[in-house]
Amino acid sequence: MRSLVTVLALGLAATPALALDLQKKCATCHALTGPAAATLSELKARTGPDLFYAGNKYRAEWLSSWLQKPTRIRPAGTYYEDHIKPGAKHDEIDASTLTPHVVLNQDDATAATKALMALKANAALIDDQPFKAGSSPMGEMSFDKFYGCMACHEIEPGYGGQSGPEVYTAGRRMTPQFMVSYITNPQAWNPKGLMPNKHVPEANIPKLVNYMLALAKEDWQ
Amino acid sequence: MKRLSTLILTLTVFAAPSFAAETAKDNYAAYCVQCHGLQGNGMGLNVRDMSVQPRDHTDAKAMSGRSDEELFKVIKEGGLAVSKSVLMPAWNDVLTDEDITNLVSHLRELCQCTYGK
View 1 (cartoon, chains in turn blue, green):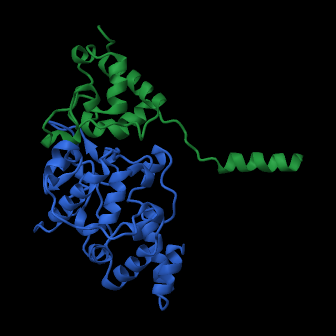
View 2 (cartoon, one colour):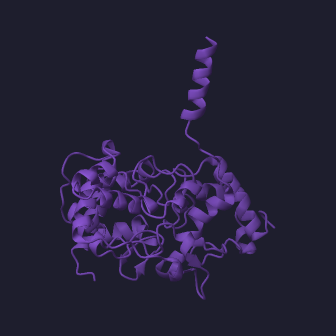
View 3 (tube, chains in turn yellow, orange):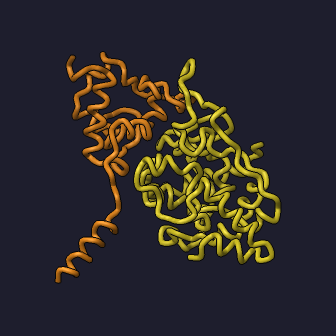
């Protein structure tokens, strides 16, 4: 696997210094090489999501667009406990502790996307067959009630749990194959991560993914 | 032979993944606080839209009604395993039995109670 700096340097051959600068910027918060965190202290030290398998996770078109106009995906930051405080009714997000993601210009976003999409760790965890998108009968019921995913994830802006990333945009951000794999075994990707394995039967996982794909088509601001 | 042994020992020491045991306090902070709250009172970040409220671990009366075995089982196998809410997930893919035993002790510290008292 080529390192991000190499790929960035190739993508931005005319301005290798900028490529190195970009690589450093990304690596400040994100792991660009594996493995995943093996301890909680390692997990907490990573202030952005792991990117060493970005090419097996993200949709390139979304990544490029988001890097130019980043919005918060995880309401309470990457590791929620560092960004909450006791509130009047329940624990609340301490917004003063959250910092916005760096904004890239179009050229840098294009180069960074190309570099990130080349990071293909954990390819063996991804089904190489295309995901067959379909309707999602009982998808919302499964997500909210049968498996309790909503406890940690918002299914629309301002509704749902806040310790995990929002899922109403998940279908825009991630490939369905990645979502299938991650739901099947979150610990295979991130052994110390906060998402438990709900042991969703294989036949039911497409319902959850189709539900998220349908959610992503709604006009969220 | 000695050199080979040294090499094997060196490889073993440096190649073995470092799975340092986590403290119960750290595991609670990472996995439990999101729903059970910074103060363990069931008022976590995620409770706003939950259909079933998480257990208040500081409630001595309620917590003394649960045996250590029940607490172990619900952490390891999830709420459904003890006829409680699906919102409490099974943590056995993340936590070892030792981690869970230590968490049960941590819960007893939070509630300042024991089973039946």
